[in-house]
Image 1 (cartoon, one colour):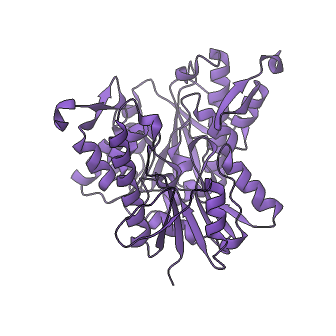
Image 2 (tube, chains in turn green, cyan):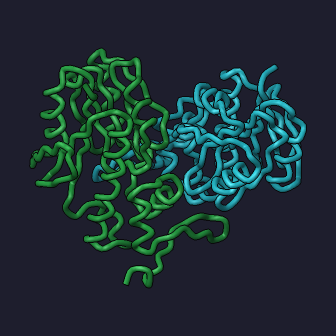
Image 3 (cartoon, one colour):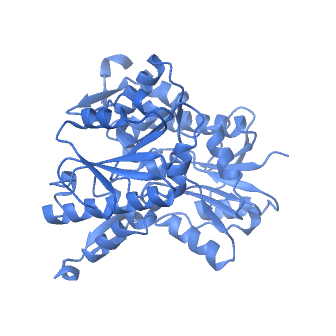
Length: 212
Length: 212
């Protein structure tokens, strides 16, 4: 039995903080490319991806559950069905690898957590899925740690930059170029993005001619 | 014999990208506090910190080597003296823990590397210190990986957010509040900084009255 890994995903108008560098259509393609990379890493790690989508969506043979509830409610509903181990990984963790998922799910603690940049929660593992209660948004990392402590759930912070970095802002695209070798990087290249170095600082440039 | 860990450090006018939220004196205190946390993690991991400073500096009983050379030259000179294992960790990796240093130095590859945000290099481990050649600045992560490949040096990327996050910008101070429990966090609190959440996004605020 493969351990289920929930991947919450919003197909429509995602990644709005990239609006100044990508059209809506491009952002939807990019979010889908990152999702494909996350799904692939989860599958190659030997886990079972389950998409938790805000609207109907199909991706190969991956199981999709559609929920129009809020993120916390949708996750709680899905996790309540797992009496054994289960995990949650965000769909924009484009740097994830099979071994980072494996490290998350091999924790000896009752809960494993990887904080995101700025206080969010990018990945959760629970030995007993239905003991989880989602507290996403805001300082969710602290809320999840506090929930574990109040509930007598031992918790280990998994030290992984591949699960710590989620792709939200233009500067994060640099990390995709450096540490992703899948669909997300290929799409950025197709759209004409590339790395540039100015005064020793690395950034992103876009060659509009590449995408005519 | 403890494995030596070089910690390059610039005491004067450091962290200029924090100038809009800290005076020069405060930045010097903050850089010193982060350095203290890095030194402590290195020592608690069972390694031997060696400060590589741009000017005379004393920190407890830690060995200090002063070099007015550029960073690459100073590191190459120091590493050339190590025929066995040696490491380099940047002084602003304020989230580092003994176990993240240990994971770096336990790689089976000939070289271990932890990329920094934006293409830098935050940590290096070499089984044979004097085979290293420093290529800091710009896209140093790619340069170091390319150097290893050209030189027949096997290289493993160590997946650690604690070594991946260096503290350069205001937004990085959030990570110090969340994941540092030492001198750096204490100093920020002393200076009146605190976390704040606005519209679900976590940032930093400063209460000027706290530091009269």
